[in-house]
Length: 291
Image (cartoon, rainbow, N blue to C red):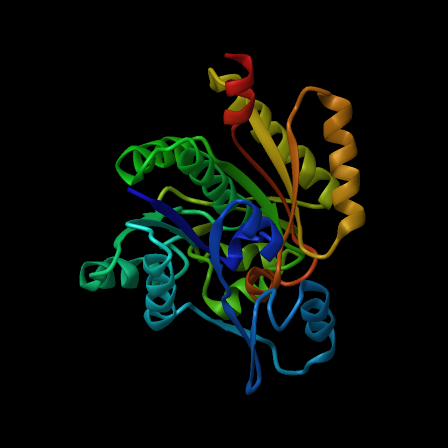
C-alpha cells in the first residue's frame, strides 16, 4: 500500500517545499479580467500584489476542476500510489470539497480520501505537514484521517484585515455584522467557525490592539490545552509587521515553535493586502521530541 498526499496552493507552500515533503500541490487559478494565472506557477505573490494596486478590475479565483484532479490521480496511480489523501480549502468557503466527495467514488485507478480542513492558509499547511510525516512513518489513510481530525480540533486562528471590502465582494464572509466593522473603520477580527466559514469575531481600533487580542486568545488556548501549541504568523505582503510579531513572540517565550507563512494570490484575492494573522495548533513535533 502506497499513500500520497495532495493539496492546493492555498496552503501557501512554495513548489519546492511541497516537493521536499513529497506532496502533490495543484495551483488554484487567479483571474485578472480575461487573463488567467496559476498561483505560484505563472503568477507569484509579489506580482499579484503589484497588480492588485495597478489593475482597475479586481481579481477573482476559479477552483481546481475535477478534470485537473483526475489528471493528478492518473499521475499518482502511474507512479504506483494506491490511495491519496486530499487536504484542501475549507468547505465553508468553497464548494471544492463537496464536488470532490461526489467525484471520488467515480475514480477507479486510485482510492481518493477527501479531508475537510475547515480552515485555509497556514492551518491547511499544518494538516498537510502532519499527513506527510505520518505517510513517511508508513501509515495509511485509515490511520491518518482520524489523526488529522484530532489535529484540526486544536487549530485556532485570529486574522485581521484592513477592511472587509474584498471578503464582502467575493462572498467569503458569513455573518452580516461584518458591515458594522467596515462602517466603523476598525480592524475586524476574523476567524473560521466550526463549519469552516469565515466570521467576524471581534473588532479592534489598531493593528497593535488586534495583535494583543490575538495573543490573549492564544494564551487562553494554551492554558486550556494539555499539550504544547505552536504558532504561525501569517502576513499578506506586510513583512515588516510580520517580523515585529515574530520578535515579540520570541521575547515572550523562547521555547515556542514559531512558523511564518505568507498569503499568496488565491487568498489575497479575498482578503486584500495588509492582512495579518496568528494561527496555533498542537505542536506534534515538540511532543515527539519530548517522548
